[in-house]
Image (cartoon, rainbow, N blue to C red):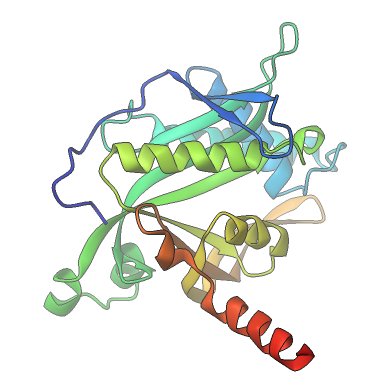
Length: 252
């Protein structure tokens, strides 16, 4: 939700968002807003990580190129607005000589939600009406988070997430939400460590997956996770704390 009494619509621009990893306090990571060819490079990183699970050798090169083109178009459509609508695609570039590769990326866009459900879902299902319209709110949604295989376990994913949360705050929002595949336990573990909690889900969300080297439309179970950016108490995992207390009580 937008925060009451805060200035809204401030863009991140192309400045550096420098962060420091917890694992290596001496390592400073530059997170920047995407520009120009970054969209295609970020799309390639996302496609390889999301659809091909970070494989070093893509089984079907033609399918990889096709998906990358489509993903590039999607990224530009959703995030290439100079931050005017609260959207942003952030990247961490490879500092190697002459390299244009993106080591990590992630985006945030503002979408209309009804509770934990994307408003477009209501529209597609014909579930509109005055009661729905009155409960529509704008929420900043994080998506397209990916890290190149060789850049994993270096804190880049966390750095991108922290920077995206900063974008949300700068645009007047007090929360951040994201959608994750229910089977992606690794991603869920990262988000939970960062303070995100499950607030809803979709048992049959439309999805695109690569099977035997070919992209196929399918459905998958997804979870909607939320983090308050202004009230840390809202992010406490009460269920986990209860389980720990029960274990400690049993050992006493």
